[in-house]
Image 1: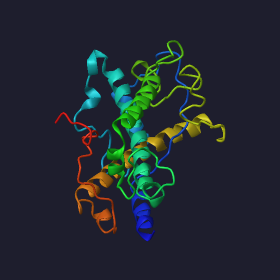
Image 2: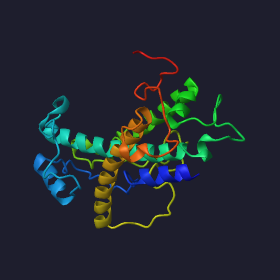
Image 3: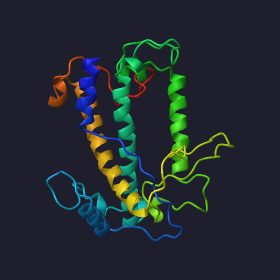
Length: 256
């Protein structure tokens, strides 16, 4: 519909999705970064925001998380930003897809028990049965454990110990052989990249992730508070949600 075309066009301007092939982690603890390295990375990967150096209002780049040391803390922060950016890119595109009639409309075979057509993305999640939500969270937890190096005692170097921030190891063959492809590049359809291309791709991914985080929050804000995002307020039929997205199990139980 014209309404959804307007949504896609408007939202595409505030975020993009790009997952790039990470380079393999180094075998030795050699790439731990200091604050000076962060400043160099910021200078080499400028943004459109009007400031120079590291944007670090809380001074986290000087912290020592859990007694790991400052360099390990910086590795943790860099990995966390990349991971949040990847999740935001997926969520941003997911919100758009779930707002279309193809996903939210009538289905010959209901995607889950109790499915209701015509719901917003947030309502679609709320309508999923409790057991379905737990299955999703279990799958995410499994991917998270593999991403932290579970099952790779020798070949994986953790990002707080010198490993490459953002690197996700191969999971093909894991889960007693039940996982038949990797999370990234599941099919060999992309050409191999040079180290320079990989480096550029990693920087693009960081910038796209930052844009997607802002874009996703703009979608949720406009959905919860009409008019809070001027760029989206003029879109007729923009999905509205009266629940609380910060309580993901609001329809099942809540501790608050």
